Image (cartoon, rainbow, N blue to C red; front, top):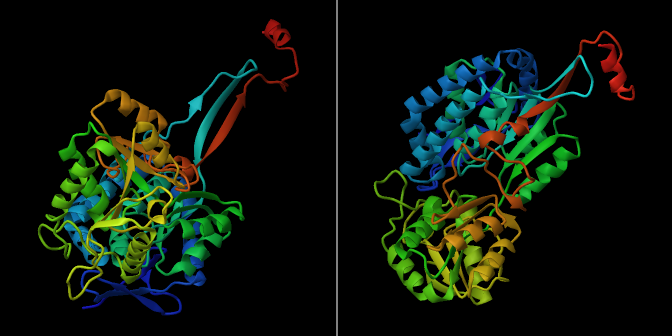
Length: 496
């Protein structure tokens, strides 16, 4: 049975103004799962107007009351966790254990940001003049536009939506066209929690809907997670209109394995980081930078481990690797595998589709003999393809890690504490792991990357509110006179 998704505008579920729809597919079966509104600029404008109307009341709602609502969101999400996780697996393919973790991140973030309703800390500082008081306060921005991806269709929106809401903003959300049902299920949680109409609006659609959101003059902040190509277009368009823009884009993450590494631990972490979520994480391990002495042992162990990986529908027990999200995603993987072969890399395992009748599946793939200048080693693939690069020492490993255009996550496996601390200091990525894979960020720490991964902003953690708030400096002069900086302060003090 094909389900019908809807937009959520001003507290009402509705179709696109044009009546047009687009299909959402189950990537494991290739069946149409849902039809969703193909929204246009007119639908985006309606959502923005609803947000504009709701914003003044939400902004003036005391922050502790906003926080209590987010606590209710967390509780309802926990009650609906299994249902939303199952729906997510059907829509984008990753196994139930992973989709459950996706929802759990949103639960954690709702509690975390709900607590900010009783913090929202500003500060005071000494001022230059007598009988004068100064402080810095946080304030909301207005209407926030969110453009989010399909690979974490609840977790990633929660990193943006929840801080935006606790800060007192109204939100218009354009999710990925691959996950309209999951997006609607997430919004229904806020509806059940009692969020006032118009404070959160959902508009599904294709790229033109996202472009309309970025261009809308009433939207003051755009927060984007997705491909580098699309992100730079959004950034150019939104920034040209004076909007605040936060970007989270691509990654080409590496695990460094030194000769003294715990081999068994490294193999477990590499396998999960490279092939979990079918390699479709911005933090997935795409490069394996290996010191020469451990290379042959590591390859042998990785091949043996790969033989134990179960590929299939994420609803089935024991499946570790589900399908790519769609045919286009699998075609991109196949194109890069062919590029790797043509560049002279050595295919160790994988390199083809499994023998399944349906679904956008691809076998976990490992290349060795990859040089640092190959496209395989420098460009984001977003699939289960891992490239092994051999280095002679830690200096070369760090250099190899830092030379790509992305800087999201990196990892090193070593039993040498000196090497570990050198890596912490010298790896130029936004996230660094020691003796762990490149995936698994936690919501209490900043998330984001350097170089081509983003534009310097971070999500989650203590800085998670920064993208969605303005600072307001306040001065209270109770001297009863006009005080000017050029007046001799000593003279004023003598008059006191």
